Length: 226
Image (cartoon, rainbow, N blue to C red; front, side):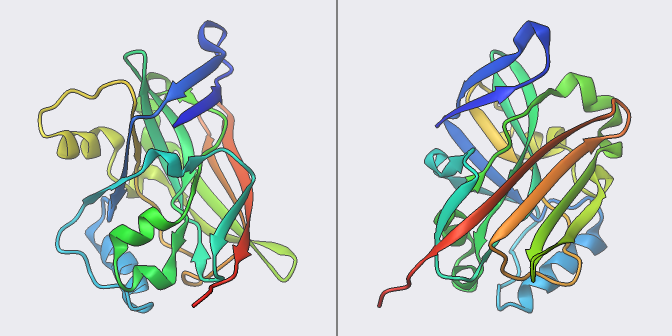
């Protein structure tokens, strides 16, 4: 999948990236209690607990999109803001994605639910080396629109998640990360429980360098035809 990023970097102001392998890291919390909380959130929706944590789901690269309008089947889908890292020209970059998921399908198969929905990606990116030393200070927030108002849905620092380096080490098992690899690096617990929403906004804020990656999208529901 071909993605384009704006970096604000004079040396690489625009990136034209071909993602050839896309991985979603699930159950990627650093704090075991937080992971168990997220597992319980999903169990309340009928989603079976994972056999191990973290888990890595391969997803088709054509599911990545930088569009602001997506189409989904039915009304039981919702987003989850996540850091997104990718490798391009020998360097690791950071952006932002939503692991938009079909919650009904998730009760049957988490892997299939990951594949069923398009994954929105922000159009901005940072060099990993610019944020690696203060990674834990980065702040992830998402909002959903309910009754016409934006409501905070997730909020917290990345200190609660395993670092991309830790996740990549576990996933690659000694393999060297190659250009074209992209990973969605885990999410935070929701505020008020996981619930469907057709409008989703997300932001990754760097309080040290004073900048923010953000993306807003909405979904249109296609009919469920039996």
